[in-house]
Length: 315
Image 1 (spheres, rainbow, N blue to C red):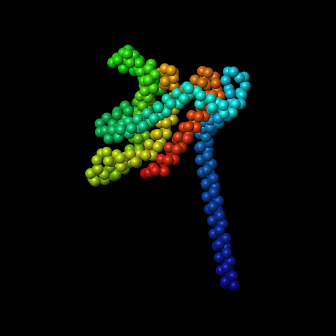
Image 2: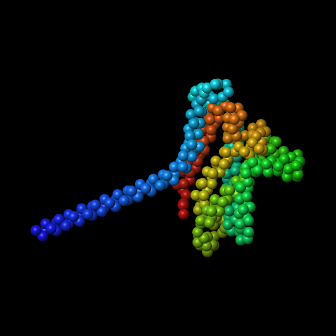
Image 3: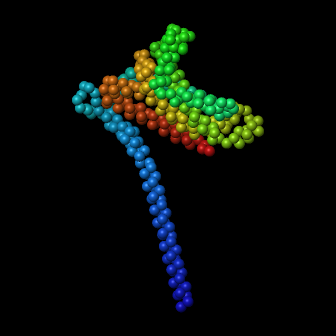
């Protein structure tokens, strides 16, 4: 009889324990569901904007790139891959592609190098630290149209600053020098923006590493190569991607300064897309170039990110 009572009590304890475990699991699931719903609710507005103004235009451009849509046809005419094949024969597209590639190759590493140097100086300077940082960052906050007009004045023959020293020098009017005038202007505007990210990265590096290196007698260049630059690798990955997209979204500067001239010497892909789509009303070709541009940027960005991310230390 006693053993039966003990058995019944043990059974009741097991049932209660199991019920308590079930209740805890139910509360955990409800809490997890509530957290998930809250997270999705916070993400939803941003996702809606992303879908409407990024994903949908890309998908729509991809669809329209298979159609002929210009002033010679009343309704879109399906042409398959003809628009893509025609791009290979378009000399202006080839020139714009080369110009954009040159801009990216020149501005990205130069901006990063200048930004690192400015960030190190702004991080170590003892006096007027805030003034130095604002002075470096100031070109970034200027509107793009204002920057274009400033540099247009600088490059203006006779009346401009450069024209004051050499009245016969026509930088933007010469096909051989116009692209370099654009590149210098872009580096000037972008370096301060990139510097902010490196300045933040430098402040995240522990000072104990530098103190230990100095105690070991390491030189400044060795400290930079072995400590600073490797620990700034995550910042460099992000900055390189941002700088790449900036190099391929030039419209305002070109419209004010050169309009792609002289002789398409400064024409870029995005500006050429604008010309084809809004000046020539060849929507099908403009969509095709948009798909090529977006696809190329996505491919390069993915290769750069996944190849560098595996070799990066995140402290």
